[in-house]
Amino acid sequence: MRKARVLFVCQEITPYLEENPMSHIGRYLPQGIQERGKEIRTFMPKYGLVNERRNQLHEVIRLSGMNLIINDTDHPLIIKVASITSARMQVYFIDNEDYFQRKQVLTDAKGKYFDDNDERSIFFNRGVIETVKKLGWAPDIIHCHGWFTALMPLYIKKAFADNPLFAETKIIYSVYNDDYPGSLNKNFINKVPVENVVKADLKHLVDPTFANLSKLAIDYSDAVVYAAEETNPDIQKYVKKAGKLALAYKTPEEYLDAYSEFYDKVLEGSEVMAD
Figure 1: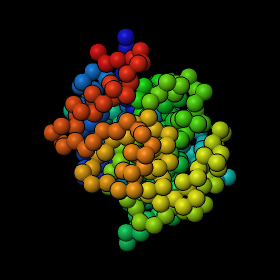
Figure 2: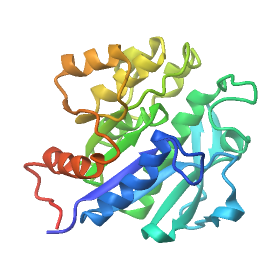
Figure 3: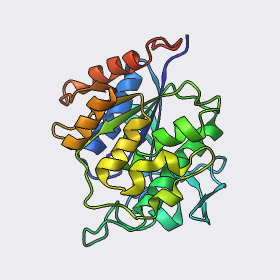
């Protein structure tokens, strides 16, 4: 049997961004899972403050070149890649001049969240899916990290449910304490739909708060991981009510083995297993 394949979709990864609990997991979890016998692919947004020269990013021409239509506007999809040699892993970057050239991540220089974070998130998640399709790489698990990835479960389970690459894919959503204040753009709900995704699927986005966006992700995920010691209590209650398979918070010393075992549990009953 082939190795189980895990796709990591990350909001932040160090050393490309400053280290914090999320970016640390984004960096070391894929390496640890690869070392435990699974095949991996890793994606993050190519924020403008990612130093391309220092990190030796280069464009992958064969994967770039298509446009994604968001809010009736075409946005070119550019794919870049870098290698973390010590970990024997590559990181793919989703780039676009309109969304990711600014020298900040999610907030401006004054700490205000960007008004177009909703569209940036849509572009990133759809960009990852289109790139994986071009790679022809069928993931057994997609593990999403950070609210910026919260649309991935919806798109995989609804828009691409009939695509052979994703037909058997299990999705895990990690809950962090990365709450944003207030709500995203009120027009978010009108921008998310694509084929097979309609407004009726998006009830939580009537008011796109952090908790509601997370609930949308949880609805379409197969399992949930608590990636921080303290997380939004409203989300915790929702996970329990939904009856989702969940993994409690694990310390930095515990999480690699715990996550690997959790992946196997999520895949139980599948023909795919790690070597």
